[in-house]
Image (cartoon, rainbow, N blue to C red):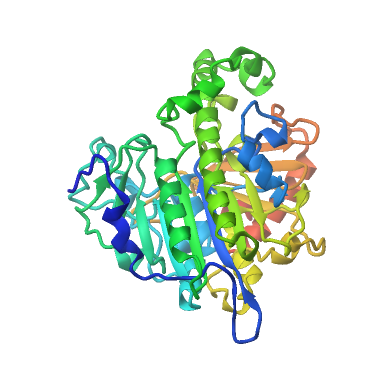
Length: 495
């Protein structure tokens, strides 16, 4: 292992050896402009956690500014709100039973080969094959840990989490400074493009700041070149380890009255005290992480504009899932409540997209692969393995063929074959209702129905009262599961 206490940019300069690439859009053979792509993903970022949304006491001036130049999708969700499955769907456009990521990638699930399938074609593979230079910076979390485990803190307990991604599993990404999953945000670890499995390094710098530095260096390096680029920057905060955030961001929330926040939250104020205490302790640091991500996002956008790239680049900000943080007596995510499912999704593209707040488009993060390829003029290159929806026309403003439902799914456990379709949870969400069911060994054990229009905090489960509506939504859910070949459809198709 190479432990660099103060790792300098020169040490990774060789990872840029495949440059130069493109700073402004070039034309393909048909004369159409080929846009660049910049995706910035934050982990565990709630959908309403922006100051411009007016719903949370968080400070996000750079996101607020970007929102005025973007399409802001307020109904975006993560269909499987947990890290690895959401990321696998985001990249591949295939559901977990097809892409291999049916639960988080860690040592317990590794024996069932839970990791992103190497033979699957992702949007990054397509862009690479179409002549784009591709770059990935930050959290990956799509490889199974193997023995002997990497020597790092989150591989020393009962479960190992972190793993190197070998070059042949990077799905077309050329430039690479990344890690599996690692939550020590103030001293993160990385592998660069040429590193072997043991050649990781540590950085004495907050993860998002370091990753923004790399992204800016990348953008500066490619200015004026003749090749289009696609870069994804995956920041771990505001993932847990909230407290591991620089003090200057913590200072922003020293006066936050967490008691008044709790008093306005019926889905928290009457909860068991341990959940209330967890929320109150976590909230200031969670917001501090968000403000830090906001600043680093702003730095990257400023570099994009300074280098004349912004108008020719599709820019997307998204999260893999939200965060319950004690609400509904739930810690974390992986559940059907809005705090976990709802995610930010903002997209800009110079004058090609008219800025707006879109409160109607029921987009899911798993729709990204076919949608982005179509927006980039590559609809005919969408892989045959894609199961999700191409919403490019709706992003551009069309209201025709608007999706009516979004899927929710959860695999509670896996068996020796890597599949366990008869235990878990499935559900659907539309503009007004959320229906979800938990099941075990093929039998539905609990059902939930929330009218979010009249009960935005999802306090009243109407499943027993609205039997006809439950039946209707269950029928629609069953058809959706059949359409995507989810083996769990058998649970819902029984009389």
